[in-house]
Image (cartoon, rainbow over all chains, first blue to last red; front, side, top):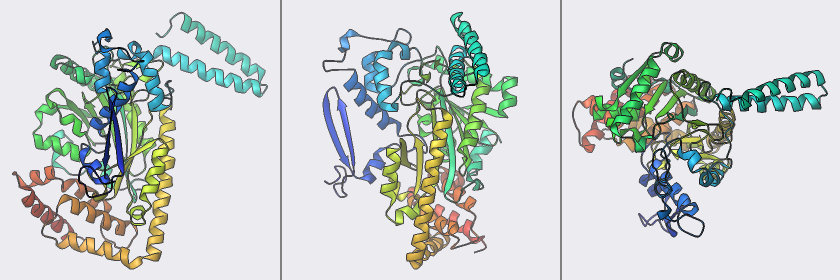
Length: 175
Length: 356
């Protein structure tokens, strides 16, 4: 198959875009595929990425039997971003969009990242509660190790620390 | 160094070629995306709110405790800069081309040594990045992490317990981190093994791109390899994964070079010396051709086929020969043809003083 753009080189890059249930395939050679992407060092070709993402979102959110009709008008209460707009652009409107669209976003995260749970850095000041949770998870792991090594004294200490932190969580500490 | 000086000087620390493995890995870059809680993401920002973000960042970098952590940071609104100056920041890889769209609402923060830059109101409110020469991803992450901690003393980040740092695009959620290495792979290309290696990289959850996006083949055999996944892995895991894959590719490139030299010594030497001759004597050079010649010459320098050419010079020239810098040096607008002539002259002058 020859490149659709230059008609000279063999097509080795294949894009599939799905918009409102319509599938469109583009076949390009490496050179043309490179040229139609915006320039940029170290920054993914954003436009292309968003189009691509919008394709996936459209499949997940809009149209079909599983999506919500556009008229349902699901909008983030904070920034007003409509679900249909998100499906079109691939960009969320604000931090509150995440809990608001959570149900729809989780499958998407699974597809993009193969995961739905953050395990990395937690901000020191604004991540209070999350930091407690992370610390508890960490201690639980150590507790398990201590038990398996039959270090019961250390295990008891760890258990006490976990209880203390959990009490802090229940009282809304660090939230 | 003030922003003016940054723009006037083609050199950046990442060009020094004094990092580990810097004969093949040119630079390491880490960036994290951060957003402020309670403010819409940049693509929905009105003028007033975008100024609010810039103001908040200005305050955060001037916070005493933070500035001790961060070193001298200077914030400039993009609107204060000329179009040429803005383009030079892109060519030096200090900001992304996206920051030039709708630039009146955007700003950049630079640390004096240009190792750290922060883009304000790009796709996310903040994008903190660090570039270092050679394979120094851990070091770059340490720098970014410190700057991030410093800013967080003042700024309220949009963060969720479940999915981490909240970003405009769901592909960045979690750590918000992209780590990448710029790597020179002429050996694998000459040995026709590039496609196989790049394919394998894609399967390992990493992405590969050419240096400036355009026809990757022509641009000096330079590739960007970066992580794709940002959720579910810690920053350290992402970095360690990228380091180990970069080392693999490095080993493959070295093996390819050794084999080429063994089997086709004359072909390689011919390429290197032809490139040197063309760069030293050519009268007209497009930026694509110059990049290709730099790549061949760099291969010769790295394989010690030719001596007396500092890699630092080649790195610096990669930026100097870009249209924006040529225009700046010429002091007036040039046609593409005039630029090609100016470019050849510039390279000729630099090469005339080399002890080769």
